[in-house]
Length: 414
Image (cartoon, rainbow, N blue to C red; front, side, top):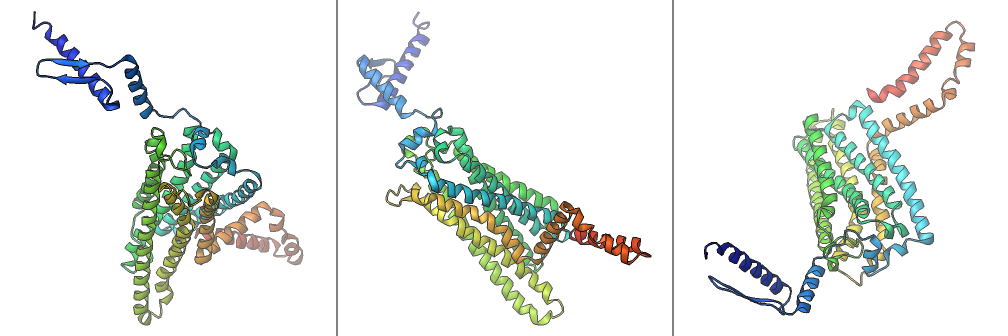
């Protein structure tokens, strides 16, 4: 009889023990337990005290996944959404629209130039095209931001706000990681004093996939759980559902990566410059070939410098917000630093065309051929004069004229 009642007695004892431990975790006024080797004694409080304990416990662990963003903006220190109204909002949207259109056109032209011209079928230019793709993706992120900012911000759901910020974080990480990969590629080639590294297309493809995998993961980190939806007191001001600890991690890690890249690129640049000065007296016949690594390094360092200048102010503002700097007035400068970060994606194609003569000529030929295809009457304007002046050889002259024009358009593919 005693044996048959032992499991039920043990179950009751365990239930009382769990209730006591839960009560002791929530408040000191709750249930008190004393458990011996063979017994369980519990002294329970009043019913009102138990209700208070359960309510307190549920409040500490309450999450706000079903709330709209107006709930979080209202809890922040400043009224963020209402600042994006009036003339300032119109100016920001107009400038942002112009920048985005230029980003889409220019970076698409860079990618097409790398695909079209066989001179660019090397690892460095493949990675440069991937950097242009990251800038193109940044344009998409900014377009989505423009349609979901201002008064619209308060009407967003939590998931749409995560998507809006995740796109921006992904674009930044893609550009940063791609610059790190380019640094590795430049180091591999320059240590051998070669223009291009010996990376195969398969390895370059894997590196590009690795860049985007890291970028997507970092953009999704807050969505995966590193947020303040279940700890409302830890929310930041600039990003109302991002925890301040995440902003500190995000900004510090990126600023450290900036510093490391600047040091690495400076060391590579100094090495190339020193080697070039040593070899130049002995390589008079191939001096232009020896200067090519220096040209590529100058291009990459200009891109890196523009990237650091455009993104550093915004990351510093995020760091100050993560540190809960109440007197820094980060709300008043955030939109301008965001436009500065957008300007980086505008500057990169200009840097490519300005620093790289082959890139500039290829892009120019592509634009000329595109304009000729759009205006066929201009292309055929020479036919009457050729036919009338050279009646005997009109057909051959016409064919030669067309073949020369075809060579100009197709020269980029050679």
